[in-house]
Amino acid sequence: MSRTQKEFLSKQFSNKLLNEMEGNRSFDSINMLGKPTIIDLNKEFMERTPVLVRVYVISATSLAQLDEDSLSDPYLVLKLGDQKLDNEKEYQTDQTNCDFNKMFEFKTVLPGASQLNIQVWDKDFLVKDDLIGETFIDLENRYFSKRFRKLSNIPMETRPLYHPLSKLEKGRLKLWVEIIPARNADEVKLIWDLTPRPRCNYELRVVIWEIENVPSQDIEDCSDLYVTALFDEKQQKTDTHYRAQKGAGSFNWRMLWDAVLPLNDPSITFQVWDKDFFSPNDFIAEATLSFKKEADQAYENENIEKIFSNKKVKVKQKSQINGQTVEKEVVMNDEKIMIDLTNCKKSGYVRKIKRDSKKNLLGKARNFREVDFKSGTDSKKHG
Image 1: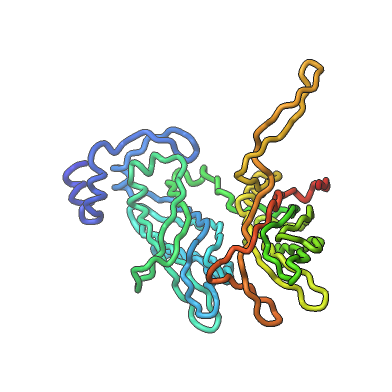
Image 2: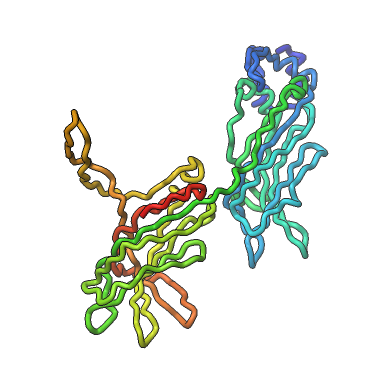
């Protein structure tokens, strides 16, 4: 870089960026078309290159709540120079974690207007909209960076959001930015499709085998036990194990629900009750089983997923070897799992479940077997 170039650029750019410009600024690279090309950053600095800027905003997490009685209603606003884009009409209601899956496109020249401002706003109807937080990206620092220009695939990044009047983080944005020289803009027609996969119909299958160590609710030191399971505001229950002694009940009861994936809250709440005939049934304990990992895997892989216990069991398997039946033991993961039932309290005619401050353990629901997702397109049943 010549002395005249340094003096000219020092009036416009920081020392940090100037230091990066030192040395050989001409290099071979692979453009977004996958074709080899030669890039001369010194020349581009002096010529003001027209570029196409594509901003892919994927999602926001942990957004600050600005409304007193509800969560925020976020939407995006992007600014570059005197250009402004937004998706205000696509605001999302009562969300702190939301998926935008939106692409915004600007045309500019570099060097030039390079401060990309990405803002998240809270939509209001009776008063002015509120700024939740914002982040800034210097496009020149990236476009005139040898390291950035050598990238054939731009990585995704997570950026913190801040409000001008606060030093506290107001959330995070997941996004990536592409900067395409105008000479390649007509050729680079590939725009990443951010449309989420359509929701899929599945079947949730749960088998309740038995419960144990449940304290007796009757004077005779025995109980008439049954179990309820709540999923997606739909409740099912087992039959009743009458005169259950020592807090043990056996059911071998299968429950089926229709489920549409992905789910916001993939979990099942189990409750144990004592059935009475001349008074209201006694609520004993409850437990919640989350199956988010299995639900996500079933949706992504389009297959059956099961929850297995960490316990290992020995299973006898028969096989044919040289026309003879041979039996051998195989160690496998137990398909039956165990969850702890925790003490809860009731109040009023509308049952409100609250955790006991002592979290007393009131027994164990043994072997809630295989939370099993099966695609709704397959009508085959299994017990």
